[in-house]
Amino acid sequence: MEGIFRQAVEVAKSSTSKKKVGCLLLSKNKVIQEATNIETKSHPTQAKFARMVGLKEKIYLHAEISALVKCKQEGADTIVVARVNSLGDLRMAKPCPICQLAIREAGISRVFYSTNNGFVGEVYD
Image 1: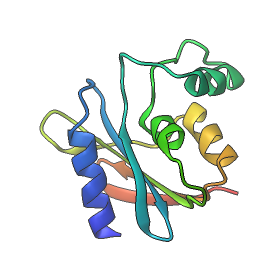
Image 2 (image 1 turned 30 degrees about the horizontal axis):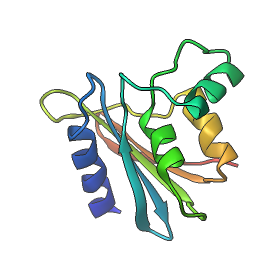
Image 3 (image 1 turned 60 degrees about the vertical axis):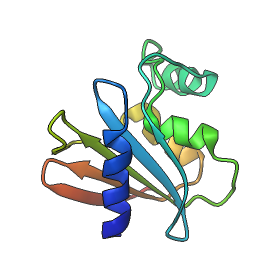
Image 4 (image 1 turned 120 degrees about the horizontal axis):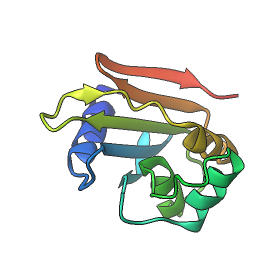
């Protein structure tokens, strides 16, 4: 997974947003989609999940939801999220409640995200 984590960091670095977040969707340990957060765009899917968790003002497109929307393949089983600061150092990227709901509804069970000290993983039921 180390190579996947490095790739997620590179995707995060490519984000044009202030909060540089990148996301990879995987199926059987192969990347099938990547995305960054976009502070200047929204999407009906983002707005729907934001309303569902009571955060209707959070309409800018999060990297996790952007990847899910762009993914044309079925069978994503893992999501990797990375956030970096302006120096390229890792920062906390645990999916917010909006993205957690979207990830669960997509049937993705393995979630890895960056912290200030590396990557950690969780399993969603």
